[in-house]
Image 1 (spheres, one colour):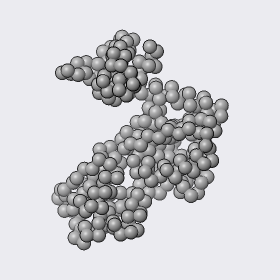
Image 2: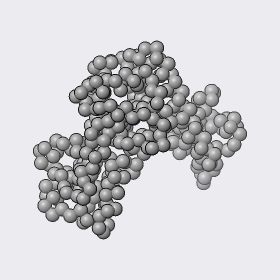
Image 3: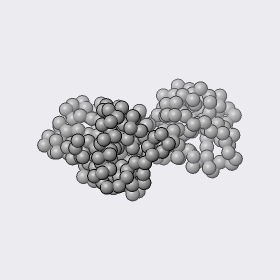
Image 4: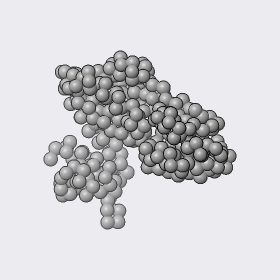
Length: 291
């Protein structure tokens, strides 16, 4: 088994938390995963795993090695895509990562527009909370990210920006007696950038208003529509609901919040990624401007 295959088995185990989960993700046998990880540990020369009850967990060395392993595998994938794209950008591959709201409301139009002009570029998309998306770029698992502001320590380039305004919404019935200090606040999943912004807003309110955590962007909006509480959302994500009166904007100190979208790439983006960036800046209907 090659070192690359061993690395993939180890990263799969680190992400799944078990040999069984890693084997299922890779569609191989559990014994194959165990042998690969054992051989990798022998090659590195330190214990990457340790027993925990009936299961296993990564050692401190294993956690550090997993971070490098993800980066190595991401760079290998990126290198192949870069070589193919350099030879012919119109037949290259672009891996995109996007936070949930952008994935639902921005990517469909962007990808449809790009594919209409560049049909032979293959596209891969990962949609996840911001806490998961930025590490994907850091580890070279994606070529471009569509999200809020990138972390300050990330070695990357902001290529384009698009306006994005966050507002508090609830039903018209909720608005009639709305008090931000006593209303039930609907929060996004852990790792969401909007959740972090809302948590900061709530910290400035008097008292400790009740909170209800939902599992996704869509679930939070559905709960607000059902009258379960109020929430902070991107205005364009609920524009139709605001237009038909199902939801209304509610007054809260510090809101609306300007939180522009960013398109971010590696400093040495692949030729096919550059093709995508040029396209989204050229298509005025997408609303992007140079970053």
